[in-house]
Length: 206
Image (cartoon, rainbow, N blue to C red):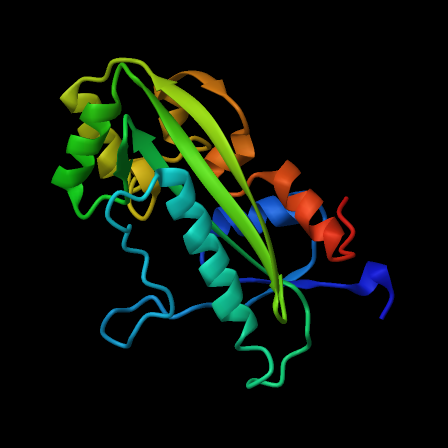
């Protein structure tokens, strides 16, 4: 198999991560983990007591990549590298996860309004016993928001299944006054770090 023919597995359901990988010319196949508590989950994403946010995100991304890579041999799949990622929003020292419902989304957006928060994304690549990883930390500042604005945004359905209850590449761009760091990292997959990791596994990008 030539280098140009090499592909990876993407252990993520995120359509944004799929689009970002396509943006840098990386071929991939999906290798999804179990996330339904009723059927069992492959990776417990519960933060540990006192765990710093960056360490938490890195631990989860590495665990996802490692667990997914362990599925290759039993399923008789080609031994391609497995890429996984995790993203969280941090306000002060508090990890802000995905909204549980519309009212929770209102609370999250109200807390972020008029303030700066961090977006931490970790990416990990695994193959057999090898796992390499990297972390991207960016900051985002929101303008002030009225509750009516927040509720109109929530009614679009965009905030659900997203850390921090917003998608910077979507309608929430109207809330953002300043960013520092990686735009793709804020979306969920920091491309500079991802490209460097993939190249360590002889995967060409671009």
